[in-house]
Length: 309
Image 1 (cartoon, rainbow, N blue to C red):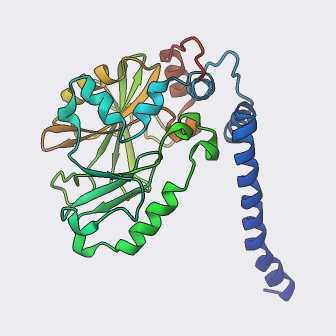
Image 2: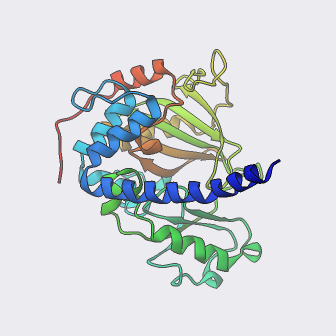
């Protein structure tokens, strides 16, 4: 490697960092001043074409439309992991909720010595901001506080323009640690619901905390569905969860008021346990879906009249 090549490579890292810093500031500005333009630019970058936000057809286009033009207060209540519990209780479904040990306004307010040996800490206003603790004696408390402080300070409405996150009060919820007996994080069953009807179940297994997972999708009869571009022909089979019927019954009740919601569950020794309700999965844009699924889900999603508050 020549000296000039080494010098050039030495500049790449700082240049990338500067680019991402400027891009981040532009995104925050657009999220505040022109969410529609931000949506169009993000879609154009992901799909290589401009979205039709006036007459949306595909699933991603309709998700973007809902984010921009259907800002129902229930999205704020149910998208917040703590206030969602009140909605679930109003529907008489409190048995779905994991046990809660407390809710805190700051990381400093948590007395770890008073928590049980196993627990999960969740920031209530965002995604992938969880501290999983299977053994309190092994927890790096200082690192956990640093992570929670950083997550609490993040306004997720300014990252991709997801408006309902900006109306939530950032808090930390402490819940029971869910153990399905495998020794790993339990499989996450994410139910895609359209206008009050569950249609698909996305199974996330081999999960990494706050990271990636292996994915498989099934219909309500548990037939594999080709959902993603890299799925094999016929889809990826998954073991049927013991609590599937309870999960689907609960999904119908919980999703009733919403044009679209993804409801996340766990099946813990035959018990259906509710994780969260998500209205903007993948921040409304996922180019890894097949074109057929984009169209099919777009047809299922019937848009309501606009509602902005």
